[in-house]
Image (cartoon, rainbow, N blue to C red; front, side, top):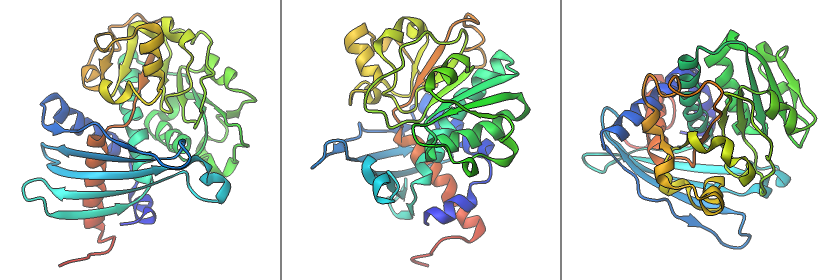
Length: 320
Protein backbone atom coordinates (compact mmCIF):
# COMPACT_ATOMS: atom_id res chain seq x y z
CA UNK A 1 0.00 0.00 0.00
CA UNK A 2 1.38 3.42 -0.92
CA UNK A 3 0.79 7.01 0.16
CA UNK A 4 -1.83 7.70 -2.50
CA UNK A 5 -4.00 4.85 -1.27
CA UNK A 6 -3.63 5.91 2.38
CA UNK A 7 -4.77 9.44 1.51
CA UNK A 8 -7.85 8.11 -0.29
CA UNK A 9 -8.74 5.88 2.65
CA UNK A 10 -8.27 8.60 5.29
CA UNK A 11 -11.87 9.80 5.57
CA UNK A 12 -12.61 10.15 9.29
CA UNK A 13 -10.64 11.78 12.08
CA UNK A 14 -13.15 10.39 14.56
CA UNK A 15 -12.15 6.91 13.38
CA UNK A 16 -8.44 7.75 13.57
CA UNK A 17 -8.78 9.09 17.11
CA UNK A 18 -10.72 5.98 18.14
CA UNK A 19 -7.73 3.90 16.99
CA UNK A 20 -5.55 5.88 19.41
CA UNK A 21 -8.11 5.37 22.19
CA UNK A 22 -8.05 1.61 21.57
CA UNK A 23 -4.24 1.58 21.71
CA UNK A 24 -4.24 3.60 24.94
CA UNK A 25 -6.61 1.02 26.44
CA UNK A 26 -3.98 -1.62 25.62
CA UNK A 27 -1.33 0.53 27.30
CA UNK A 28 -3.44 0.73 30.44
CA UNK A 29 -3.80 -3.07 30.45
CA UNK A 30 -0.06 -3.60 29.86
CA UNK A 31 -0.97 -5.34 26.61
CA UNK A 32 1.81 -3.68 24.63
CA UNK A 33 5.55 -4.07 24.14
CA UNK A 34 7.58 -1.11 22.92
CA UNK A 35 11.41 -1.06 23.08
CA UNK A 36 13.15 2.31 23.14
CA UNK A 37 13.61 3.28 19.52
CA UNK A 38 17.19 3.61 18.19
CA UNK A 39 18.31 6.52 16.02
CA UNK A 40 20.59 5.86 13.05
CA UNK A 41 22.74 8.89 12.17
CA UNK A 42 25.50 9.27 9.62
CA UNK A 43 26.94 12.18 7.67
CA UNK A 44 24.93 15.31 8.54
CA UNK A 45 23.86 14.83 12.17
CA UNK A 46 20.52 16.59 11.68
CA UNK A 47 19.41 13.68 9.51
CA UNK A 48 18.16 10.51 11.16
CA UNK A 49 16.45 7.20 10.46
CA UNK A 50 14.51 5.73 13.37
CA UNK A 51 13.43 2.14 13.98
CA UNK A 52 10.13 1.84 15.89
CA UNK A 53 9.15 -1.75 16.77
CA UNK A 54 6.09 -2.59 18.86
CA UNK A 55 3.41 -5.12 19.75
CA UNK A 56 -0.19 -4.06 20.44
CA UNK A 57 -2.66 -6.57 21.90
CA UNK A 58 -6.40 -6.38 22.36
CA UNK A 59 -8.51 -6.31 19.20
CA UNK A 60 -5.52 -4.97 17.27
CA UNK A 61 -3.19 -7.90 18.08
CA UNK A 62 -0.40 -6.97 15.70
CA UNK A 63 3.37 -6.65 15.91
CA UNK A 64 5.45 -4.62 13.51
CA UNK A 65 8.02 -1.95 12.90
CA UNK A 66 8.10 1.52 11.41
CA UNK A 67 11.31 2.61 9.70
CA UNK A 68 11.15 6.39 9.33
CA UNK A 69 13.71 8.74 7.81
CA UNK A 70 13.78 12.47 8.54
CA UNK A 71 16.01 14.61 6.32
CA UNK A 72 15.10 18.30 6.86
CA UNK A 73 17.03 19.61 3.82
CA UNK A 74 14.90 17.50 1.48
CA UNK A 75 12.56 20.47 1.10
CA UNK A 76 15.32 22.23 -0.87
CA UNK A 77 15.47 19.23 -3.21
CA UNK A 78 11.75 19.06 -3.90
CA UNK A 79 11.39 16.01 -1.64
CA UNK A 80 9.34 15.36 1.49
CA UNK A 81 11.22 15.74 4.76
CA UNK A 82 10.01 12.40 6.10
CA UNK A 83 9.64 8.98 4.50
CA UNK A 84 8.49 5.86 6.29
CA UNK A 85 7.71 2.20 5.75
CA UNK A 86 5.67 0.07 8.16
CA UNK A 87 5.74 -3.73 8.21
CA UNK A 88 2.90 -5.50 10.06
CA UNK A 89 3.04 -9.08 11.37
CA UNK A 90 0.39 -11.38 12.77
CA UNK A 91 1.03 -11.38 16.50
CA UNK A 92 0.42 -15.11 16.96
CA UNK A 93 2.51 -16.42 14.07
CA UNK A 94 4.86 -13.63 13.04
CA UNK A 95 3.64 -13.92 9.44
CA UNK A 96 3.97 -10.56 7.60
CA UNK A 97 0.51 -9.36 6.56
CA UNK A 98 1.11 -5.83 5.35
CA UNK A 99 3.70 -3.39 4.05
CA UNK A 100 2.75 0.27 3.97
CA UNK A 101 5.05 2.78 2.26
CA UNK A 102 3.51 6.02 3.45
CA UNK A 103 4.69 9.10 5.27
CA UNK A 104 1.02 10.01 5.71
CA UNK A 105 0.56 7.31 8.35
CA UNK A 106 2.99 9.16 10.63
CA UNK A 107 1.24 12.49 10.06
CA UNK A 108 -2.18 10.91 10.64
CA UNK A 109 -0.98 9.18 13.82
CA UNK A 110 0.58 12.40 15.10
CA UNK A 111 -2.55 14.49 14.52
CA UNK A 112 -4.77 11.73 15.91
CA UNK A 113 -2.83 11.60 19.19
CA UNK A 114 -3.21 15.38 19.39
CA UNK A 115 -6.90 14.90 18.59
CA UNK A 116 -7.31 12.54 21.53
CA UNK A 117 -5.84 15.15 23.91
CA UNK A 118 -7.94 17.94 22.36
CA UNK A 119 -11.08 15.81 22.60
CA UNK A 120 -10.49 15.11 26.28
CA UNK A 121 -9.65 18.76 26.98
CA UNK A 122 -12.55 20.39 25.15
CA UNK A 123 -15.22 17.94 26.31
CA UNK A 124 -14.22 18.23 29.95
CA UNK A 125 -13.81 22.01 29.79
CA UNK A 126 -17.03 22.44 27.74
CA UNK A 127 -15.01 24.68 25.43
CA UNK A 128 -16.58 26.93 22.78
CA UNK A 129 -15.44 29.96 20.75
CA UNK A 130 -12.01 28.39 20.52
CA UNK A 131 -8.99 30.11 19.06
CA UNK A 132 -6.53 27.65 17.52
CA UNK A 133 -2.87 28.59 16.95
CA UNK A 134 -0.66 26.49 14.66
CA UNK A 135 3.02 27.26 14.16
CA UNK A 136 4.52 25.49 11.15
CA UNK A 137 2.21 24.61 8.28
CA UNK A 138 3.88 21.74 6.48
CA UNK A 139 2.20 18.31 6.26
CA UNK A 140 1.99 17.90 10.06
CA UNK A 141 0.47 21.35 10.53
CA UNK A 142 -1.98 20.77 7.68
CA UNK A 143 -3.09 17.45 9.15
CA UNK A 144 -3.64 19.16 12.50
CA UNK A 145 -5.81 21.85 10.90
CA UNK A 146 -7.86 19.20 9.10
CA UNK A 147 -8.28 17.27 12.34
CA UNK A 148 -9.29 20.36 14.35
CA UNK A 149 -11.76 21.35 11.65
CA UNK A 150 -13.53 17.97 11.71
CA UNK A 151 -13.27 17.44 15.46
CA UNK A 152 -14.26 20.90 16.69
CA UNK A 153 -16.25 22.38 13.80
CA UNK A 154 -18.42 25.31 14.84
CA UNK A 155 -16.69 25.53 18.21
CA UNK A 156 -13.73 27.15 16.44
CA UNK A 157 -13.92 30.92 16.38
CA UNK A 158 -10.67 31.47 14.47
CA UNK A 159 -7.40 29.85 13.51
CA UNK A 160 -4.09 31.71 13.65
CA UNK A 161 -1.40 30.25 11.36
CA UNK A 162 2.26 31.13 11.16
CA UNK A 163 5.07 29.67 9.09
CA UNK A 164 8.44 31.12 8.14
CA UNK A 165 7.62 30.31 4.53
CA UNK A 166 4.45 31.79 2.99
CA UNK A 167 1.33 29.81 3.83
CA UNK A 168 -0.26 28.47 0.66
CA UNK A 169 -3.97 29.28 0.82
CA UNK A 170 -4.85 26.18 -1.19
CA UNK A 171 -3.56 24.16 1.79
CA UNK A 172 -6.39 25.57 3.93
CA UNK A 173 -9.72 23.66 3.78
CA UNK A 174 -12.29 25.76 1.95
CA UNK A 175 -14.79 25.75 4.78
CA UNK A 176 -12.07 27.11 7.12
CA UNK A 177 -10.85 29.98 4.94
CA UNK A 178 -12.97 32.66 6.60
CA UNK A 179 -11.77 31.65 10.05
CA UNK A 180 -8.06 31.55 9.24
CA UNK A 181 -5.74 34.45 9.98
CA UNK A 182 -2.13 34.25 8.75
CA UNK A 183 0.00 36.04 11.34
CA UNK A 184 3.33 37.80 10.88
CA UNK A 185 4.94 36.02 13.81
CA UNK A 186 4.42 33.22 16.30
CA UNK A 187 3.73 35.62 19.15
CA UNK A 188 0.19 36.56 18.10
CA UNK A 189 -0.87 32.95 17.64
CA UNK A 190 0.71 32.00 20.95
CA UNK A 191 -0.80 34.80 23.02
CA UNK A 192 -4.35 34.43 21.66
CA UNK A 193 -4.67 30.65 21.28
CA UNK A 194 -6.80 28.49 23.55
CA UNK A 195 -5.17 25.51 21.80
CA UNK A 196 -1.62 26.10 20.57
CA UNK A 197 0.17 23.55 18.38
CA UNK A 198 3.84 23.54 17.36
CA UNK A 199 4.49 21.73 14.06
CA UNK A 200 7.90 23.15 13.18
CA UNK A 201 11.31 21.74 12.37
CA UNK A 202 12.94 24.24 14.71
CA UNK A 203 16.52 23.55 15.77
CA UNK A 204 16.48 26.08 18.60
CA UNK A 205 13.94 27.01 21.28
CA UNK A 206 12.32 30.43 20.94
CA UNK A 207 9.05 30.48 22.93
CA UNK A 208 9.70 32.38 26.15
CA UNK A 209 6.42 34.16 26.93
CA UNK A 210 3.65 33.53 29.44
CA UNK A 211 0.94 31.31 27.92
CA UNK A 212 -2.72 32.29 27.83
CA UNK A 213 -4.55 31.30 31.00
CA UNK A 214 -6.19 27.90 30.71
CA UNK A 215 -4.65 27.15 27.31
CA UNK A 216 -3.69 23.73 25.97
CA UNK A 217 -0.27 23.43 24.32
CA UNK A 218 0.49 20.52 21.99
CA UNK A 219 4.28 20.59 21.73
CA UNK A 220 4.37 18.30 18.71
CA UNK A 221 7.75 19.44 17.39
CA UNK A 222 9.30 19.23 20.89
CA UNK A 223 12.07 21.80 20.45
CA UNK A 224 10.28 25.16 20.57
CA UNK A 225 9.90 26.11 24.27
CA UNK A 226 12.65 27.74 26.30
CA UNK A 227 13.21 26.71 29.94
CA UNK A 228 11.81 30.13 30.92
CA UNK A 229 8.24 28.88 30.38
CA UNK A 230 8.59 25.84 32.64
CA UNK A 231 7.13 27.41 35.83
CA UNK A 232 3.82 28.08 34.05
CA UNK A 233 3.47 24.45 32.95
CA UNK A 234 5.23 22.62 35.79
CA UNK A 235 2.03 21.38 37.46
CA UNK A 236 0.46 20.00 34.28
CA UNK A 237 3.17 18.51 32.10
CA UNK A 238 1.97 15.52 30.05
CA UNK A 239 4.10 13.18 27.90
CA UNK A 240 3.33 10.11 25.84
CA UNK A 241 6.25 8.15 27.34
CA UNK A 242 8.86 9.56 29.72
CA UNK A 243 11.74 7.29 28.69
CA UNK A 244 11.24 8.11 25.01
CA UNK A 245 10.74 11.83 25.29
CA UNK A 246 13.39 12.71 27.87
CA UNK A 247 16.27 12.46 25.37
CA UNK A 248 17.46 13.73 21.98
CA UNK A 249 17.53 17.33 23.23
CA UNK A 250 13.77 17.65 23.47
CA UNK A 251 12.16 20.37 25.55
CA UNK A 252 11.37 17.72 28.16
CA UNK A 253 15.04 16.74 28.41
CA UNK A 254 15.98 20.41 28.74
CA UNK A 255 13.31 20.91 31.43
CA UNK A 256 14.77 17.84 33.16
CA UNK A 257 18.35 19.13 33.06
CA UNK A 258 17.70 22.84 33.63
CA UNK A 259 14.48 22.94 35.66
CA UNK A 260 14.73 19.63 37.51
CA UNK A 261 11.68 17.99 35.93
CA UNK A 262 11.39 14.31 36.96
CA UNK A 263 9.27 11.41 35.77
CA UNK A 264 7.24 11.62 38.98
CA UNK A 265 6.29 15.19 38.02
CA UNK A 266 4.60 14.32 34.71
CA UNK A 267 1.50 12.48 33.60
CA UNK A 268 1.77 9.92 30.80
CA UNK A 269 -0.92 9.71 28.14
CA UNK A 270 -2.69 6.74 29.71
CA UNK A 271 -2.94 8.70 32.98
CA UNK A 272 -5.19 11.33 31.36
CA UNK A 273 -7.51 8.68 29.95
CA UNK A 274 -10.17 9.60 32.48
CA UNK A 275 -13.41 11.53 32.38
CA UNK A 276 -12.31 14.21 34.81
CA UNK A 277 -8.56 14.83 34.45
CA UNK A 278 -8.82 18.21 32.71
CA UNK A 279 -12.02 19.14 34.50
CA UNK A 280 -10.22 18.70 37.83
CA UNK A 281 -7.55 21.31 36.99
CA UNK A 282 -7.72 24.97 37.88
CA UNK A 283 -9.42 26.59 34.88
CA UNK A 284 -6.57 29.12 34.55
CA UNK A 285 -3.83 26.46 34.55
CA UNK A 286 -2.09 26.06 31.16
CA UNK A 287 -1.37 22.45 30.09
CA UNK A 288 1.45 21.15 27.91
CA UNK A 289 1.45 17.81 26.08
CA UNK A 290 4.79 16.55 24.73
CA UNK A 291 4.53 13.55 22.36
CA UNK A 292 7.78 11.91 21.20
CA UNK A 293 5.77 9.53 19.05
CA UNK A 294 4.96 6.00 20.20
CA UNK A 295 5.43 2.93 18.03
CA UNK A 296 2.31 1.33 19.52
CA UNK A 297 0.23 4.11 17.95
CA UNK A 298 1.90 3.65 14.56
CA UNK A 299 1.26 -0.09 14.58
CA UNK A 300 -2.36 0.44 15.64
CA UNK A 301 -2.90 3.06 12.94
CA UNK A 302 -1.23 0.93 10.27
CA UNK A 303 -3.47 -2.00 11.24
CA UNK A 304 -6.50 0.27 10.86
CA UNK A 305 -5.46 1.31 7.35
CA UNK A 306 -4.64 -2.25 6.38
CA UNK A 307 -8.22 -3.24 7.30
CA UNK A 308 -9.63 -0.24 5.39
CA UNK A 309 -7.58 -1.21 2.34
CA UNK A 310 -8.80 -4.80 2.51
CA UNK A 311 -12.41 -3.64 2.74
CA UNK A 312 -11.90 -1.33 -0.26
CA UNK A 313 -9.89 -3.93 -2.20
CA UNK A 314 -7.11 -1.34 -2.46
CA UNK A 315 -3.37 -1.93 -2.61
CA UNK A 316 -1.38 -4.76 -4.16
CA UNK A 317 -1.85 -8.36 -3.04
CA UNK A 318 1.60 -9.95 -3.06
CA UNK A 319 0.52 -13.45 -2.18
CA UNK A 320 -2.81 -15.27 -2.29
